[in-house]
Length: 313
Image (cartoon, rainbow, N blue to C red; front, side):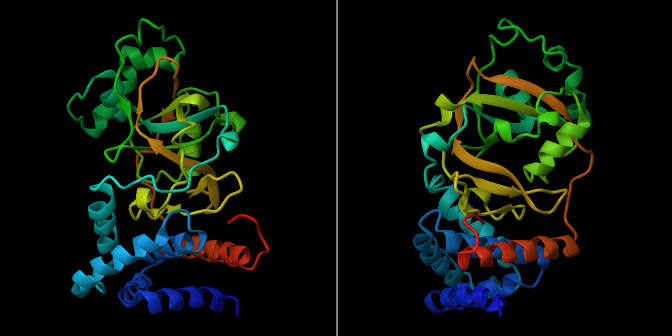
């Protein structure tokens, strides 16, 4: 009976956007795609950004690519977001997070290689995976691990924190489990934090934490949406009282740490860094069974929210 609640939402979307309705059905064919479809449905319910405008443009895109819907539904979805949102620089449309709901300190996480390339080396050429793992042998990383970096060591650092799309993702410093918030060069801590943030694509590298003061991010922080996620299956839209989003914990298959987005940030001398530890050598991927488990939990959570039984979902 409760599943009918979600079916009514599918039907409502299909009535307004018939071709999108076909896409919804096509996305149910694999467990992972079905989870991405579910994230779209959550966004439709939560309205963390102008979902109506998104749907109108997505419908037009699907009509123009009608023949590919059944065979390539996820690829179409990702291409739409990249072409119509990322390339047109229409990201960060999620609702602003109120200043009084932001903590005094936030953290972003990136690979040691990306940090080295973006901030320390000023764009050095790419390295192979083996070399990336050995970055920690460089003097600057040894000092980082030993917590001995001086202002002189960092005086030439400059650059921008943020991906190719110009967006950074951050979490609350005080949401990191205490046993993992202060250690250094600890692979257990690196894996735990990576898992809590749903960073399934991060592996075979070191994990760097950058701590940023509230005053740097308080005017541009927003709730993350499906636009910034670009079809990434380990992200699902959330509705939280604090205005943050939430990732999927790769280990427990349940909600992970609170997460928010902000425009790219220029490196600041008052930022603190930590070499958390080496990441696992292999990429993390959910099995079909695990995707079904995550989807089932998330649907139950969403239904409870729609019925008014929960304030968050």
